[in-house]
Length: 171
Image (cartoon, rainbow, N blue to C red; front, side, top):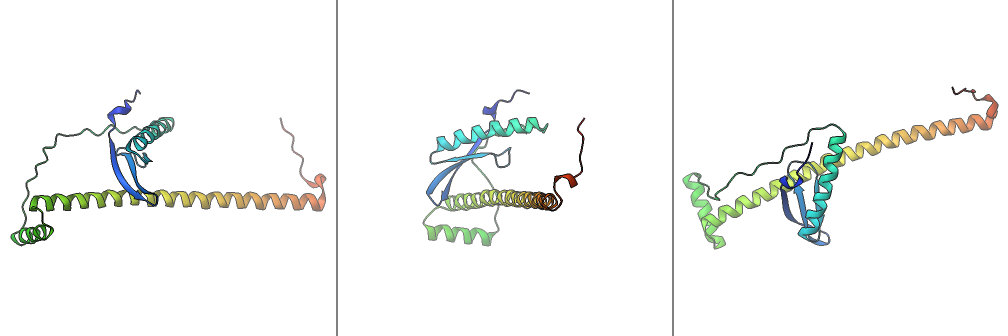
């Protein structure tokens, strides 16, 4: 199946790290398929490279490739109703901030969307960390079993010599 990578839209965010502000470019269709960098171009380039790898792996595993999310035309206008008391409280908050009610509501929505996006990324990161931790514990158990087996084999060899070990013929 031929994939047109350009059909997948990148969501670009600015995040604060220990080194300062950096860019995060991510694809909504794919969990954890993203890229980062000091510039938007670096983040987008890394995200694109990761998308190509991600899709190749999905194809190798026989997994379905998500279709690109199609954008709808949004006017930017939104009409909704508030209770009279909420309308009053929101207007008072906007006045204290020295901004219009429209700007106040846009800021509130922006803040909520930003927090929701961050919480989504953090929840996905939690799942990845849990899986990684489980893989480490599983790997440790396998290594511990192999070490125990090797010690036991070494003790048998030291105690009885090679002749006491069963001899196997390979066909």
